[in-house]
Image (cartoon, rainbow, N blue to C red; front, side, top):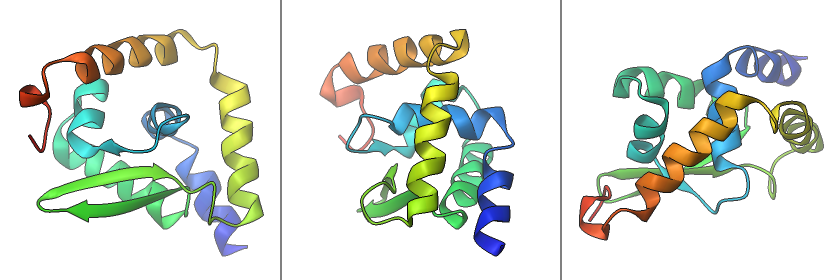
Length: 118
């Protein structure tokens, strides 16, 4: 029951769903890329990432001073994979998701010197 409650709590916030959608179809994203996409304070994004990680929906790795996150679709429990699939199907056509993808694509297309970690 604990896992189910963590997953439903994690999915109960629009910004956390936006993070999941940003990570969908990508190997990983740096926290700074998510901050840029969401246009939220770093501390707010970190709290959202903590909740998603606690629900086992995402995984993180540290490289130097940078944190990178990806969906937990390979190693996660079946219920996590099913929850992620459901989220993707449910919100893929939402206007805010399309806006996020455009903003994220613009950021990722910038010069490597402007990206975090460079």
